[in-house]
Picture (cartoon, rainbow, N blue to C red):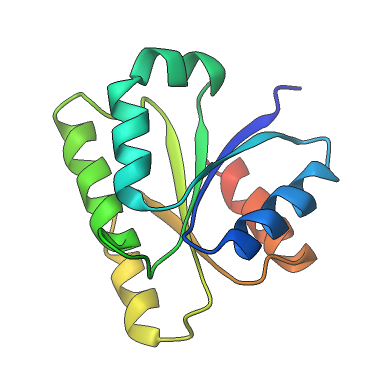
Length: 139
C-alpha cells in the first residue's frame, strides 16, 4: 500500500512536532514535510515542483493552519486553487484546515473553498487521525 504523503503548514513548532509524532506511529503515513507558513510552502513547492513532486507522490495531504503570519491558511489555499486552475498546481491534493480556532466563521469559510476537504482541530489526536483517514479515502 502506498503511504500517504503529508505536508503540515503551521507556524507553531509544537503543533508540527505533534503531527509528525502521531503520524509516525501509523504505517499508513509517509514522511511528514514541514513548512512554517503558506508563503514558504508556495515558494518551495512551486519553485522546486519537479523535485518536490518526485519526493511526494500524489495525492498530497496538506494540513493547513488557519492563522499564520504573512499569508494565512485561507489565502494560501486560494492561491493553490488559482495555480491549479492555471495548470500550475498539484495534480492531486487533499487539503484539511488544521487549527485551534473554534470560530464558526473559519469553519464556514473553509467550506467555501473547493480544495478544502475537512477541518481538523488542534492538537492532533486519535480522533483527528481517524477523521483525516476517513476524509482522505474519499478522494
